Length: 139
Image (tube, rainbow, N blue to C red; front, side, top):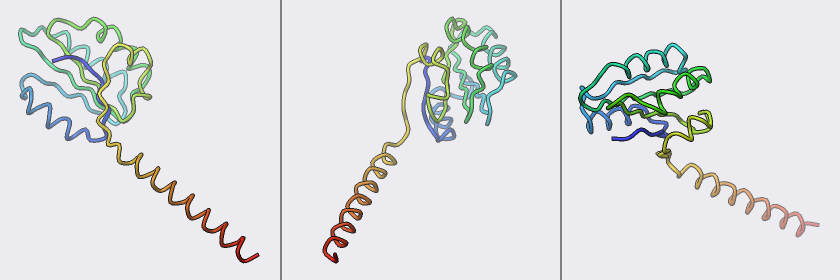
């Protein structure tokens, strides 16, 4: 078990996977639409509960407030014994550079969207070229 950032848009699948790997007694979830300072304080309080076995704290949100991230920096840098973190978000750019620099990032977003965009762009350019050729032939 190690702390990391997971880039995903499917928080529910991540939750199920984590529960399957570590079990319900070893994991605490902190999911919110907006991860606020109050959420960060809850995480810190849970992290400082002494554990003899490893415990994983999973933080997931669509948006992480700057104040919340700043308040978590120290505990992420120097976690209590047997405490590990997963920060789940849809883009690593929503996290402060200081947070990103302290954890490994695992990207789980599907790359198909980008390939489809490129395919659509090529198709649009081909149609544009075809349209220009037709106009030139009509002139």
